[in-house]
Length: 398
Image 1 (tube, rainbow, N blue to C red):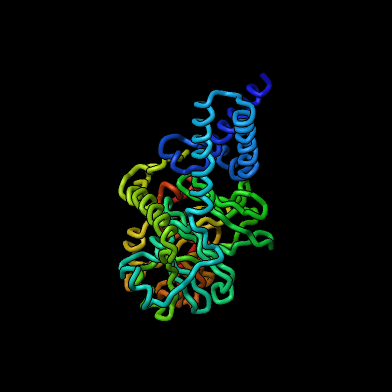
Image 2 (spheres, rainbow, N blue to C red; image 1 turned 120 degrees about the horizontal axis):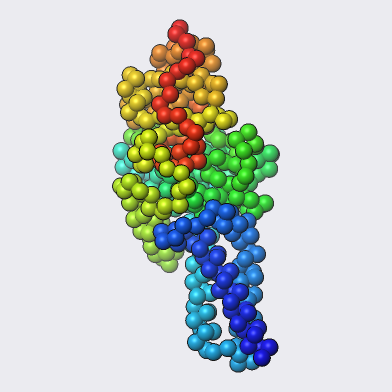
């Protein structure tokens, strides 16, 4: 009697917790059901506690069945199969399949990268003192994180990438002076939720802050990040380095990675082609722009503004504006297939600025909070108060 009770209790506990773990961190589940963000955050914070309790329940059920003959065989073996699905799939998918490269990314010369990246491919670029790194979207598709001990000319900067949002941001991986051990755990609102494995705390990708922190709280320091074509990168930075996620030499790992790439690629192709999010875990919709419009957004404090590239081009490829009390100039440079934003502290409107920030008012600094070319539906999900294509209200004529 006691053995039977322990069998069923162990099995129910194991399957119940396993279902929650699979639902909240299995990712593919969001193709079918809507997962609450609060549940996902809880699973991220307490992942290994959930796994430990759930597997302990499975162990008790197994001990009672195999050691004392408790419980029907069909229930035990069916339960065991479900336990394997509920626990093994999410853990392997998240911790092995995503190939975290926060500290192990490899960068290659442009000449070698040409075998993997087409001239028109979009790349996300970070630069420091003339040292530039390009990150092609398709190479970042699964690792999500790219950085190494060498750093960006000595600066500890990690490229973070969310394919669902089409968003890449360079961040210094530290908060309040403490270096973070970043890992991607999930996505909600079509944007990554990372975890600092040192504290167990979740971090929303687009904000770069711990869960629950406000816009004026400390977060990761963003590094100026901009988009351009690969051919534009070669023109601007002929000695630049390119991130490549080359296939593994291990044949089994290579096959595993190939299967993961196929699964990721098929979904992301649909995300770019279809109007609706392929994983509809959104809580806010705004029809001021079509969902999959690419926008260049800046948020400073409580203020948020985004621009479409077409609007900037229509202004003669240059636009003076103000965000969060800072004068900013946007510019599109067709020769590099790039749109960027720079701080303008001159007190006058900028009439000319080149790709490197040299303007008619001197050298300007790129805006570190620019989110280049992400989907409108993601930007407005997290910054619903955003304005679109704001024209200057304080920039003055020279």
